[in-house]
Image (cartoon, rainbow, N blue to C red; front, side, top):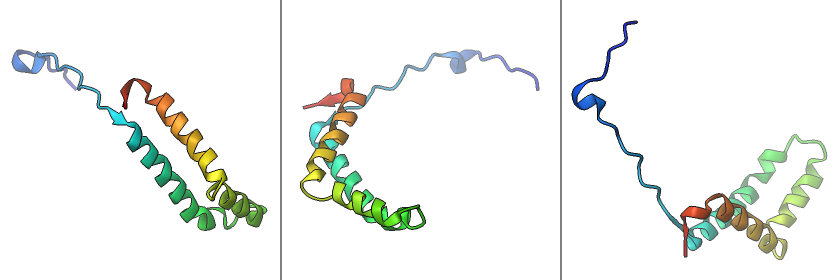
Length: 89
């Protein structure tokens, strides 16, 4: 394949897009949604796993009160740390 050199307007550099931001409230919503989703899919997800009944029980406990608040806090902390420069509020 021949290489076609870029000339004219095709050669103009394109700036990087501006990074978006995310609010703490949105991160909290994402953490809540992740726990709801895990709770909803734990049955089919763990159905054929060894000791499925035990894994379902443990997952159910992690997704219900009061452990839910600890797990949710860990999810929020992980997301906040990963998105640190872009978190506002």
